[in-house]
Length: 499
Image (cartoon, rainbow, N blue to C red; front, side, top):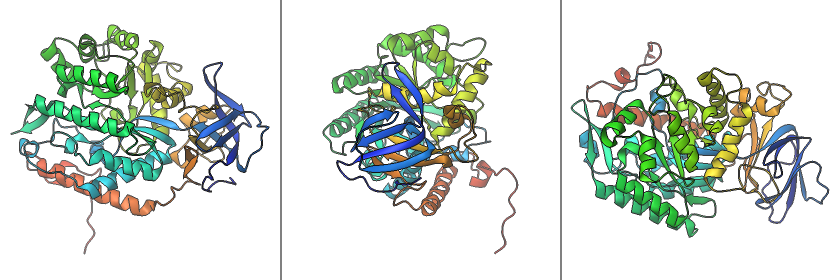
């Protein structure tokens, strides 16, 4: 590809000539594939997306071996290292935090470690074609809330990498703990409301431009089973007053559903409907389990209908649930009911191409039907679905007036298999390594497969060190007194190198 890699000059008009361009047809209300298409942008806005452009341009980018798509919108992106790298092929245990930790003082990880995790995770998003993300951090390592310095730190890293970010303080009114090998819960309603106020303050700072034009705020009560009725109602009211959305982990496990039924007499979705907090400003992440469907433990038909009727969005994160042998029932079922479904990466590796593939394949498996979920369905969810929840018609699409969030994917690689349909090639065959260039607001943030100013090998080294720190923390919390090697055994016995 020629012409890429140069910093944008203000006022300069740039044309990208692609092999295929995924443009948004406003009359049809959806994406179309334009053979030999062109995208023209000036500063942060698209001027043209479609066939040949007749106007004058200042710069040409020859991408005639590339698929040109809108930037992907990650609806649920982990911003720090988390714990899941340690949990593959390992039986998930109930609970991690001991009482002594939750009732203690100070942070598990300092600002340097948190920044290392953020740089590694957000860089992965860039490499997979994400231009906008809704962030989350690993609350397993928080005593109650995230630290006051965390959202500004994530904003700093996102700005440095050029991403558009939707950030939050996380808050809750109860915390699960492990006490003498037994699960327990600590409750503090006042701390939950203090957390909401802290999040409201952060959103207002974002709205005032404190972190720049690409950083926005959302409210984030952390999980359905750790947030009281009063805190949920207060969150919904605050979101309406601020004019922003709110997100929450919901119906993640059968145990959560059983607890909610026992405590409230309703399933998680029924509870939220009863409280009057469902609506277009809400996105519930995961939403795997409910009163049951066709002999399984998915959402019952009436629960799906509650979500659809209220306009509530669902954030689907298929990859993270596969390691536990679980799958949404079902992506296609939710969409056919009229639910807006967005896609999120949730955990490492932060690869939206992989998430689209898994969403499509597992959507077919869940309904045992080849057309239950298609490549087009998941591409829509990864672009328009996230944008729709955020209330934006200028991202997740390439059309005149939209943001110049543009991704170039090589079609001339062995992994981007030749088919008659570049979207099927992207979803079913392409690799993150096929993403060559990414623009956010017209600025290049990935150039010829590299992030300007980021040493990938050095960053991976810092991430490996941080993963060791995570393992040490979890080993220190182990109520059974196991070593790190005992708690997280390798796939095969390790032969240690002699000194």
